Length: 117
Image 1 (tube, rainbow, N blue to C red):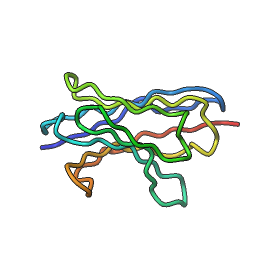
Image 2 (image 1 turned 30 degrees about the horizontal axis):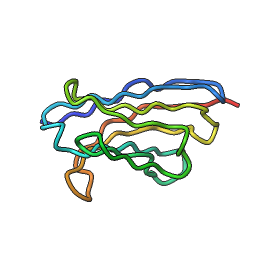
Image 3 (image 1 turned 90 degrees about the vertical axis):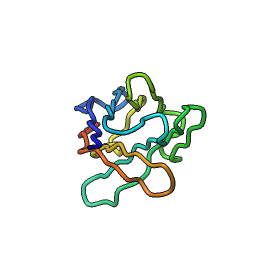
Image 4 (image 1 turned 45 degrees about the horizontal axis):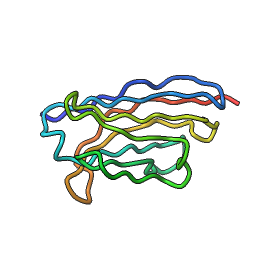
């Protein structure tokens, strides 16, 4: 079965950095667009970034553009989210997800990111 397992979350001060990883198994990883989403307490889940299977095209939410970088390693079946210049409003549970079209079919369990001011 398909599994997406996120790691790398934690507590960091404002201005700091974290790198999230999402290890995928049970799917042909390079054929899936991978996305990162986040959900803060009391808020809707929101899109953060996505990367196509080849890694050649990325999209970012305006709120993270210039601070976050999504990348992938199709040998390791892993997608990453490098987060720099973190702000308290980046505090959320971060999820990775996989899609071959519009709907994201598979989701990880999430990893908590907390940014203190």
